[in-house]
Amino acid sequence: MSDSIAITSGKGGVGKTTFAVNLSIAQKKFTDQVFLLDTDMGMANSHVLLGVNPKYSISDVISGEKKISEIIENYRIGIDLISGGTASNNLLNLENVKRYSILNEIDNHLKTFKNVKLMVDIAAGAEDNALVFSLACDRILIVIVGEPTSFIDSYALIKALYSKSSFKNYCVAVNQVDNDSHGKDLFKKFQSITAKFLDVNLHYVGCVKSSQKIRKSIVDRKPISISEPKSEISQSFLKIAKNINETPSNEWGGLTFLSKVQKRA
Ligand SMILES: Nc1ncnc2c1ncn2[C@@H]1O[C@H](COP(=O)(O)OP(=O)(O)O)[C@@H](O)[C@H]1O
Ligand SMILES: [Mg+2]
View 1 (cartoon, rainbow, N blue to C red):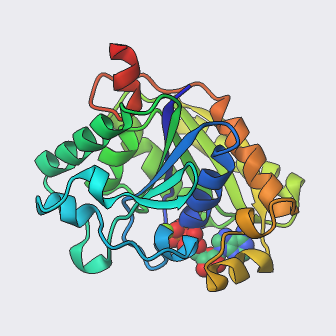
View 2 (view 1 turned 120 degrees about the vertical axis):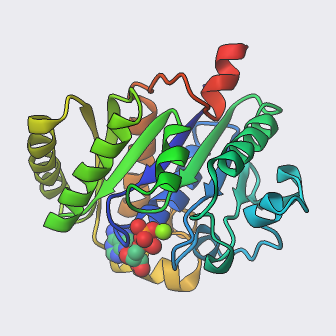
């Protein structure tokens, strides 16, 4: 089934882009075509981690110079990148009209594919831009790490998302853990805080160990899911991708990427 997943977090630097890139590669196992849309103009953009240098980006679409179909960068067979560009022409200050026109253009392009997964790398925090792009997706993945600031900011993010929509379901993955039980414990702690104040369903989709290999893969600009697909880390991403796909998606009356297309079909 075709659908879209937002990868987001309360605070920056927790591993969103690492997740977005590796989960995009992992999702190719479950679908014909994956698009990675980068809406986060952080330091380490998706294209940096993938090791590609896109000629064009979303900013060329915003300026009206290019169509979405013209800025798509092929990474591998079945994995395409829609780059967000650089911090200098960032998407943060977009007006809603522009955001929706981008969503619409992407939606129209994705309609031409049958079995497609859209992964969206979202800017950290609960700014308008992050909320609009997250709520356009069928599923939202929150990446957390075992730090109080990550817990507090992720809680605030879920609260903001929930108050702006009827989204009840949130996937949670824990990054930089020591082992599986450490990941699960951190999730339980986060869940107990969140459940006290918000009537949402958190779905634990897995964890990724803190790993020198990930740091190296970023320096080398070669995702670990490509260079070492059999490694424990790559297998974790595969498991997380599968688990996300099995969680309930969110219903939303507003503008979305692919669910809108599905509903029309
Ligand atoms: N599991 C991990 N183990 C070790 N380092 C990690 C892990 N995940 C992310 N990192 C490091 O954390 C930094 C931030 O990751 P990134 O994916 O760019 O975060 P974000 O997109 O949330 O800002 C990167 O430099 C990366 O090397
Ligand atoms: Mg990032």
